[in-house]
Image (cartoon, rainbow, N blue to C red; front, side, top):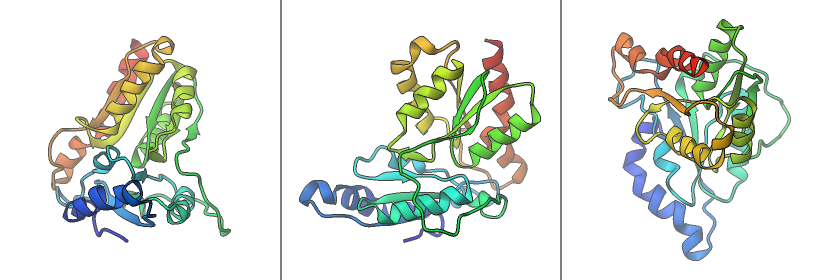
Length: 243
């Protein structure tokens, strides 16, 4: 099924988190449901059509949460989600629909849920992100060729690919979590906590989070731009490099 906007999922929240997510646990029944979630801002649609609410569902055992950043990943992950017997929340960033192009194999294929990918290899610092954040990070790296940036595209938020996260942390020792979701309660906090618990000895700087402001997302395009995480990306990168 598809939500017209991810924001509207609140109307069916009980059915997703208390019914779909627990059906298999309670009586062993599959819940073969994929919920497509057009999400995100950047189009001036305001607070009821632009929220990033993926983190709501990463706290619900029984759900899977995927968030592709490329056309090829979108196809492969959607096929995998449909074939998965578990309920899957499939987030699709509205701003990427017409702004991002890329090759898509015509063949039938799956991309394994729960596996991240390295979008760019680097040695100075690591940016862990997903969705539109991948393109923000790639654009930033392209404009700053003097900085060697490792970019990890999570692709799946539940379950997380902790092995890939650990490898990306160990490679550079400096980590920035980047997401469009607001800072408080975002998935970046969970990942930062895991890194602090399991990868502390590999860190050369504190784990930083670059996220959107803890406010409703504005209609006004200038205010929306200020709201967005990417406006603060350079400041956080420079802070890590100078630590």
